[in-house]
Image 1 (tube, rainbow, N blue to C red):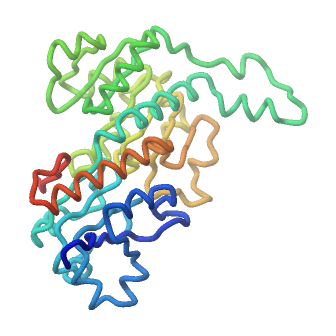
Image 2 (image 1 turned 135 degrees about the horizontal axis):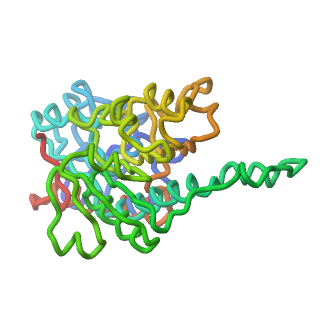
Image 3 (image 1 turned 60 degrees about the vertical axis):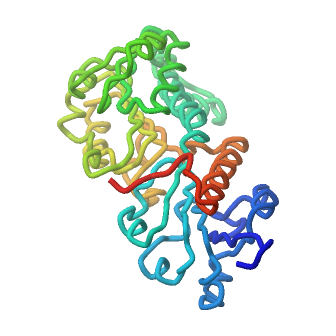
Length: 328
């Protein structure tokens, strides 16, 4: 790269269904020379030598050995979110490339999504919305009774930054809070939100009226919630998943919802995304499914890009990455 020239940043595309948002482009262009995958593929030999960073948006572009081999100057990959399960971290590290995610930008908006799903399911908002816009507007009051949130017990599985912000919100709704995590939070942190630690997930599942999944997808959390775990839950309980679809055994969840093992589910994530249009989960009334809303607010998405730029510039200048992710 010539002196004074901006570093080259590879993105999948700009605009479109899964591309970098147009509103983020001026900010990115202040710091980088942007290259799309289409442009790269049209002149792979020359452009490949110049690309120093990749910004992943919606898990794109796909990072594989072939792409890494074609980018000899690549120093860093920044991810637009927290979850890194779509990346082979050891493969990327083997090329001497650093990786970063965006935990600071996503926690509040993701926590909002979790609470929104909890409230929508508890008060059956989707069902009553459909009744309200139906031609007849006929309904039996007993059929739209929801679940009281205040005084109910919320079990949070995964008490990282997002889980803790969910606890803060749940406290404001006067909920009792249980949590299960690899490590117990400090006493002061627990007291601040009124949370009780459950060393065993089974204890949490048996007590909670609402179970919210806020874990990263790892080999240990793959199908963390299956038939056995669902049967431990109360028949009046609701399962909320804002982590990754594969954390739940979807066939077991389908059966549990069909047979009344649990009351309801609210999912912001599925496996795959989206589900096939004929999937049986889409036919149930006691489930809410949203298209991975997570962090999707105008402010949060912009903050993610700001955090990505901060990490990329740190890597290119030989500084510590604020949100570096290391292979386990």
